[in-house]
Amino acid sequence: MSISIDQSFIKQFEAEVHLAFQQTGTKLRSTVRTKNDVKGSSTTFQKVGRGTATTKARHGLVPVMNLDHTPVECNLYDFYAGDWVDELDELKTNIDERRVVASAGAYALGRKSDELIINELNQATENIAVADTGLTKLKILSALEILNTNDVPDDGQRFAVVGVHQWNELLNMKEFSNADYVGDSYPLLKGTESRKWMGINWIMHNALPLSGDDRTCFIYHKNAIGHASGCDVKTDITWHGERAAHFISNCMSQGAKLIDNTGVVKIICKDNSELV
Image 1 (cartoon, rainbow, N blue to C red):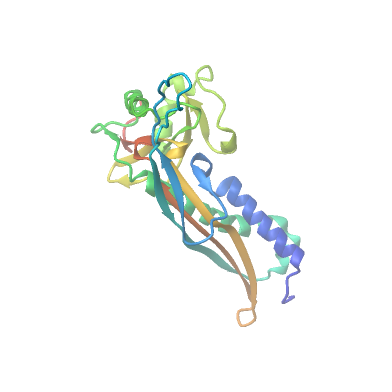
Image 2: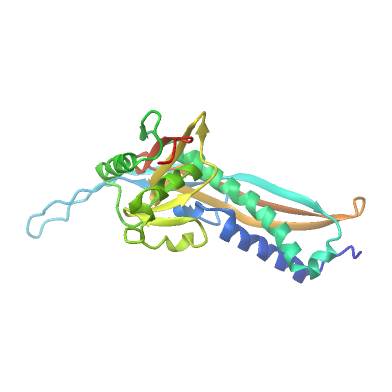
């Protein structure tokens, strides 16, 4: 077996890891405010308050809104996902096997990206909890009422992420399952189980917080959560003669932060409620 890997193969492998990460590794990254190529261990997202429009006298000075700018710091953390691979020469000629290895690393990193975002969503304090009930239309309307009361923009960038059981409950609602009520999915969510309903882009996710039988789902605006990346996905392939194998290491540096608490509503649902 050759003990060296040509550079074209390495570049191709890195490209496939990056592609897999973008396409199937993370579901939520495109649903939040993002900042890429961050230098350093942290970055800052600006939270801007509401302005007020007023009149002015003829030839007078235009009044200043004096917007409140609150910096929100987001720390970045380093994450790694690696594995040993024997007979790596086979990967040069077998595209399917190469993609399997590339995708495995991308999936692991993608799950970590979503975990960071979900953890920050869970820091929100606005919540709707009705004992012993699943996801109902009343809960959804109550969440929308909170967002509207908080003047959260209804600009096509509202998202809802629900669990697998809650997705089935949605499908049991005629309005959600009927194409007459449901619009096209958010462009960046193509390939993900998603649809648009009531002005919200709905996404199914199987890793939402679970406490006992209570699953926490979220409805939020894109600008309420920030995700920062210092290093998106980087792959290193090195030969270890003592193991007669190559070690493929994937890494990234990322972080997430709750920017605006008023833009996120938590919906607590019984995860084992009966479907009717």
